[in-house]
Every structure is written in C-alpha cells, then in structure tokens.
Image 1 (cartoon, rainbow, N blue to C red):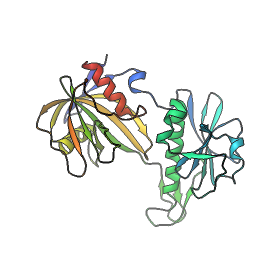
Image 2 (tube, helix red, strand yellow):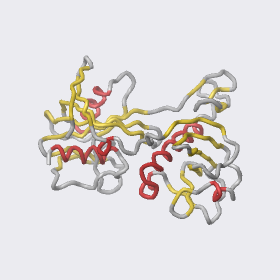
Image 3 (cartoon, rainbow, N blue to C red):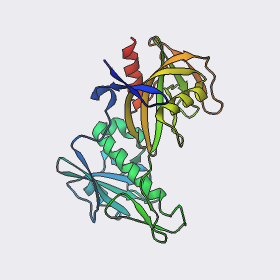
Length: 296
C-alpha cells in the first residue's frame, strides 16, 4: 500500500507517497556507505575497485577486476578513494579508452553490467561512473578555456587561470506514470530497444518546478491532461548524470498525440496486455510494477 500525504506548493499540489524500500528505494548507495574524496597513490588490494576504461567498466571473467588483476596495466591516470563501506575502501581507477588491455581483462557497458554486479556493486559503479564523467568533461574552464585542476579535498575542478570552480552537475528529470482506471499510458522513444515502452519522462527546464515539468512534459509528449500528481521515489541515473524523480498521475482528458521526433508511439495498456518494459535496474520498472499493484 502507498500512504499519501497532500503537499501544496502554491501553484499546484501533489501527494507524497510513502513507499517501501523494496518498491522505491532500491539501487541506492548502501546505508553502510560513507562518501569519501581522497587522492590515492596505489591500488589497494583490500579495496573494492571500480575500474573504468574510458566510460566502460573493466571486468575479469564475470566480475569487476581486482587490484591484483589490474596490476598488469600502467598506473591509472586518476585514482581516488570515493567511499567507505563497513571499513572497506571503495576506489575509482580510471584509464583512457585507448589504453590496451590484456586478454585477461575485458570491458562492459555500465547498463549491461547490472545482472552481473547486483544492486550494491552496481550502485557503487554508478557513483564512480558519474565522478569519472565529471572529470573527463571538465578538463577545461567553461569561462575562459584554460585547463582546470582537480581539487584534492572535494569533487570539484578549479580553473588554473580565473579560479572558476565547478562541481558535478545533476540533471533532474521527471517521470510520470499516467493511470486511467486499470490502464496505464506508456510511450515509446525511437531510441528505446525494439518493442519497449515506458512512462512519460523529460528533463526539468530552468525556472520550472517538478509539478510544472510533469504537466508540461505529459502535454508535450502525449497531448493529454493529468491531475492528482503523486510522488513515488527517486533514483540516481548515471547516464550520464541524471536524477530521476518519479510520480503517479491520473488522466483527465485529451486524445493521445505523439510529439514529433520525440515519441514514436504511445497507447493505453491494461495489466493483461503489457509491452516489453524497461530494465529492472531502472526506477521506471519499479514505478510500473507499483502502479499495476495499485489497480490489479
């Protein structure tokens, strides 16, 4: 069951829904995890190492490569302690994508690694990937173009010329599961894998509240009006630096009109006739499962 509490933000309101950890709060960093930012000089054999080859993970067989297995490579160009979990260090080691790998090591895309890593390791890999993406995309100052320097005491870069300082960006995106009785409205982006549909989603624009974004994105992408916006849960989504904020909403009016170039198809689905759904690693999947349980 979802327990709801009304929240009024002035312009419009929505319900906060209290969800169980199993429903809405999986794939988070473990509760035993403590964030750390520490420049390291060597690969620690006792640490959990998240090794990255460009933007892919380095594997040995069917699991993340260990410090001893990575010792065959030249030293990583970035090596950081990024956390602590139950007295065990979490290290992020980053090599350029052009670095040759021996046959004992292989690479795997972060998305594809979920089934092999499981929830805890995958959440740690997502954190490492986002930090690595930040450093890779902020080597030069966005104000004057001079090289930046990674700071030692925090995840930030500072311009060597004008001292402009930047931190990792997060891009909030709202996701809405629209319900009409037992039916849910699901849409398909042309970028999805064949046959897959998901809830309507889009990025928050400057000056927008989450509620305004939800109504605008639904109206733009599928042409319908919604009401009774209800909070579900959030998820850090490292592709490359999103924060997904998921809601339920009820259908009010309008016929489905797909936004050109954004939505390939959208339609109402019953629980008995669902399309291919997003990966179980995503909040979209859990939002859909929770919505279907509400209206079996």
